[in-house]
Image (tube, rainbow, N blue to C red; front, side):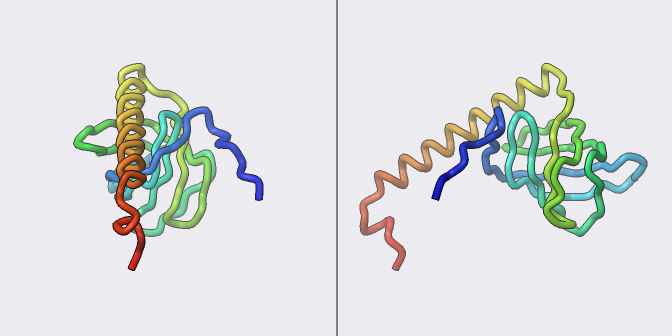
Length: 128
């Protein structure tokens, strides 16, 4: 089986954190968990089902590793009524730097985790 190369310029990394989705014209935000994140976009899982249309613009308020930041998100993928992919069409330089630093840190943590897993004695890495 052939494995396709990542087609994004900035690969998304799994991460943990929360995000509030603020649809245009709505007062109450939709709480969600972040599934993955990159400098260009994210995939989130809403706590409650919600209907979005492709290309909808929303405000996203993130909290990852105690770093809060807000971006404009555009719906790019609708996997279900709770799993939505967003692209960040326009970022300020400050937020872009924050995201780049955060994604770099997430990548470093991922590499450390993989290295530690590979170094674990075989008896510890096997499932019972």
